[in-house]
Image (cartoon, rainbow, N blue to C red; front, side, top):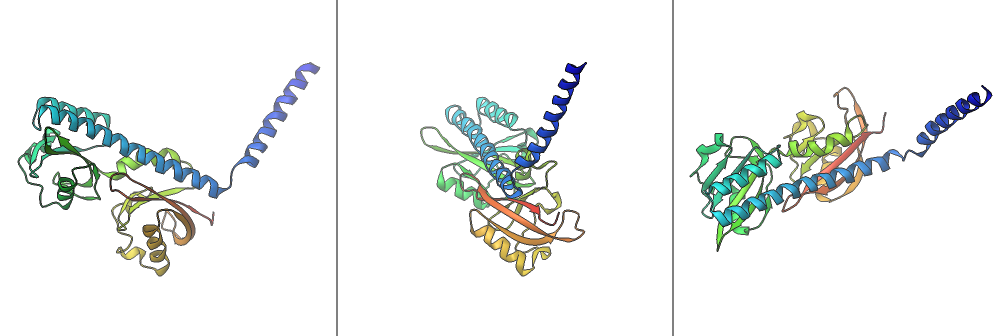
Length: 271
């Protein structure tokens, strides 16, 4: 019995010590925020690179088999299956005409000219992978496209995968922020919010929306847009819009092929 008592006492002591040591070894909030930020940036870039790789594989098949080939269509379908957050893919000729649209509910876009869209001109002129800014797609929703050039013997056009950026970013950010004191929002350098852990903020322009016109906020947002990384403190409403709180923000930049997204991790220092 004495031996059993000693064993139980040791187990309890270790558990108590472990609990205390765990609390003592927790890094300060600013270090944890930086860790969340870097994981978010790395994860977002990884997702973007993966979509580009799939677009590149589709472009390779389309270049070998033709822009309207069955093999090309199958490659496009497989790319979308590999990235379930994507909503549509268009194959566009070097003249800016849609040659293929996937899935079938967008088939009506075939033979449509996309030359009126600024990003079409950029893709055709650059003949290189390009990640667009958010715009209103011919498919009828606002999103971004990742485009990849198609070459046969010569330049044939490009393949363009479209999706809502918040769906891609959510895949990365949600596991990092759930049950934590941190919020994340992501904006283009023109001020358009493309992701926020408070969904109703998505789509707003931080430089023009009436809710953000205080000099303090405008100064903060201008710094974030102008500087690829940094930290600052500002005041704004809490997530319930119940009271003003002081927020500490750390940011860095994600994006490939022309995209420049400011990823901002915030926490209330009033808690």
